[in-house]
Length: 158
Image (cartoon, rainbow, N blue to C red; front, side):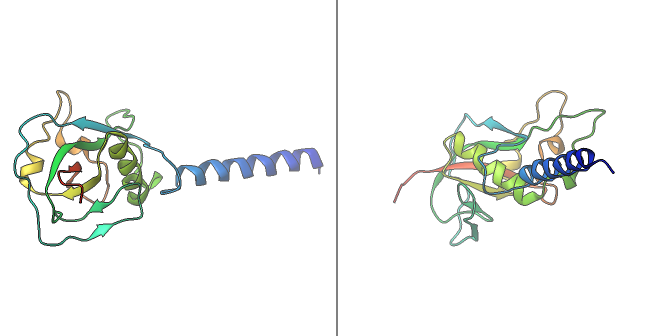
């Protein structure tokens, strides 16, 4: 068999694996891959807080899995901004929710947020009004979570 052909196939396979692995690296990039940001302008209510919350800290900014214990203001929402063809999103298996969440944190940080809050609270759900031609479901970034990703900024920096 031709050694040049074998070498070319090997190089092509290596390149393909590198590209695919690069797309699926959740925390090592500054990628905002297929995320959009909807800024919130309006009354800054006394947003929900809790006495404690679980926090994922292995992203660009912390991810609160419940209302944080300190006061904050809402900066906006991180939403899906995937190319859509024939009313279908990119396949869910293409990026894990961890990668999508990492990208969401990068997007929120770029917009000035100190953290993101994953929430199903109606207070936040009702703020996210779909644009014409879209429904609330089309903004969903995470495939295994049906809440919203709220970008927040702390009121007190202590």
